[in-house]
Length: 360
Image (tube, rainbow, N blue to C red; front, side):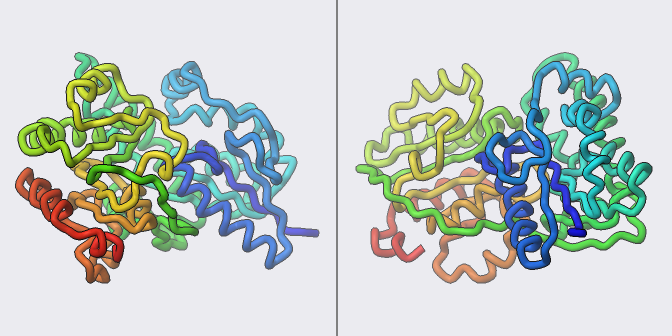
């Protein structure tokens, strides 16, 4: 009988963004593995068009997000698990790969009911640290309550993910160390498996102006804070009147205040919920990644490198890319943390010839 592997994700594996890219890394790797070793692979995810889906109907709702916190858990997948756990137990997998450490309730349930099943946890972030970044731009008076509840739920689930998993995969050395600082990690197989992008991104969009690009989820507090600070302290003071330069912002779910701000900047354009990078990023642009708080690795850095573009990025954004920095001989990766460093990075980009940019 074939051995069976089950991958559980709360992101669309064939979707866009960092979460989907991380899940696709595991999905592609597992597909290659089962084809070579004759295993069977099934998937539980929000995708509708995967050939090896175990069940259809994984859904996310605001109601389930809220109720999961009331129940002491940190993801809407808690209710999907309650709904479909019987299907998983009937499938009786030999290995379960859980897509993030918020799925500690799954790891615990599986180990109690399928004790021979091996559980692998993808530590996509240290989720406890991610909470601070997510709530970074909340101004509500009950912000502290939100943060306290979310941290409680996340720590409870993350503790169980680490306790009941047989193996843990981290994105960075920092995440490995942080997990050992926060939790008791004993008798686990552990490895660091950074972000992987299978193919380079070939850009074809032409622009009449030199272009600076910011890409990121615009409902994530740390991204919004970093973007607004960049606009107010760097773009408006130094580049607002530069008609040869354009600032492109691409991201999901921007709030109305951000959209209104962009309309007041003549050399700035916002692409809301764009389809793919190729549709908004022009050839020979430069990407910025000024995020100051967060966790894990920043996918936008890997995506920039896959497009062959320059990037100016903060220390936080470059965590996990130490080897790329070491191997960069063309000055394509610029470490920038201050106003002056970003200003100089943009000036340096503008002064490079097309031939120099084409070699990135």
